[in-house]
Amino acid sequence: MTLRNIVTVPEPVLRRKARPVTTFDKNLQTLIDDMIETMRAAPGVGLAAPQVGVSQRVIVVEYAEEEEAEEGQEPKKVEPRLYVMVNPEIVKASIETEMGVEGCLSVPGLVGEVERKQAIQLRGYNRHGQPMKLKVKGWLARIFQHEIDHLNGVLFTDLATQLWQPQTEEEAEDRV
Ligand code: ZN
Image (cartoon, rainbow, N blue to C red; front, top):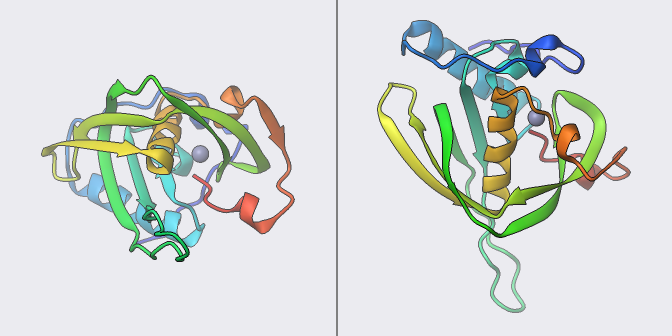
């Protein structure tokens, strides 16, 4: 596995509509492994192929969903789960939306408040070309929406109602 360079604005590849993957070959496996390693090293909780300069519809997401804490207790630590999705598509979205603060590995030094669907259903393929479906909500749904936007040349700064420079470590974390 190799660390790839994360491209940042105004790199044109970030504004291009990425091509669907048609062959699940060795090159794709290498790309996916490299993307996982690059996301973890950044560190980030999601990465789309255009962010490493490859205009293909591939995303990786690794995020630990926090379980609801019982009253008076700390939320339980949950192991992060890794998702790899090729040619992902949102097939259903909730009417409810949520505001949340996002940052992006390709837009250094800015965070912003973005409205996202609270829950979505996705369809796509795993790394071996087998069809897969996913239902996600909350932060995980937000990350998937952010990554799929990358495949369509859309950045969170296009959607944000407000943008600012992060003032705290916490604001700067969980970039995607
Ligand atoms: Zn991003």
